[in-house]
Length: 394
Image (tube, rainbow, N blue to C red; front, side, top):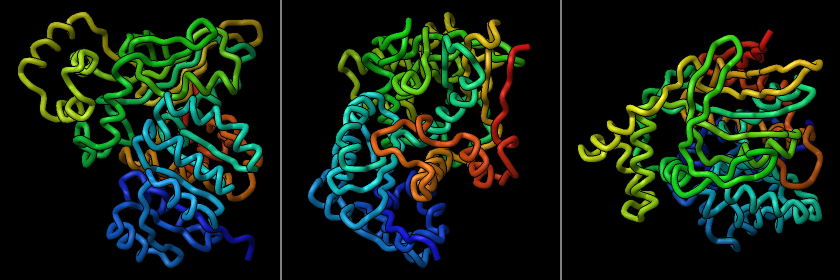
């Protein structure tokens, strides 16, 4: 038997954590999988399903308990949010414990703070892969496939679906999932200002700005910006000389309603939690204000639901390369948690060797990533080509 590891699944009993636990529990090289969660009963119920799992109680805001939990672990996989509150202190505890780390952070603000901890991680010999979920995560891997075909990269956009049909949809997810941490996060990233890449440099912009994109072989459509880490991390792995943003593929009526909520959040008349609740229970007044705005908005047109699109130059000619997801684990929780387990696998088997804080596309092998993702799709696929399709202008 080869080397054996102890892995801590922080938040492992939660919606995002359970798919990670399920995927990692079957690995022969994990001697102990610690399901660490503030919900002790849920962690215990999940742990009894797997021979190599145990349960632990943890408050993710307690740095002393985190260091104690991480001290004898080889790897921490973190699905505990919201990351704009917990991402930095949890990564700090992992670095101080000299424990490798991977998470699903999808907030751009703590992404910057965690990237700034790169020197600390390198000094401690810690590998940290942040934002290894769906978006960011799978989106970064799609961008890696698209940009590597260009000699010069001008623009890169990553996109994910809100209310358009997608192969990974799960009816059990509902329209918005209630006042979950994910929806509160979404409201934060649709209010205030967000960080994008514009004119070859970081820039502050309001969210929900329309972006017209022309996807090769399918056609054009309009998507809307959202605050996500990809525009901050993609320029670290390829030289983007013009623009990059993360956008939502969303119907005009939904975009209009989100704009109405954004105005109320920015005025201070609506908290993030109240805005999350208003997704599920819209009022007649907000509907009316949204209806007027909707008349001026464009829709997604021919855009696919989940993709990365890179424009630039190849062999001296202008070129557009798109990479789109055509197979996926079903539901938001699995589509986010399974990618984290794939990142963990590349850390555990030594494929990722460089200490430091990294975005996924800086250290993960995209070919292997999509090959392994195929086995976790619903229904299972048989390889990379059944999960991702790369499209090119002639």
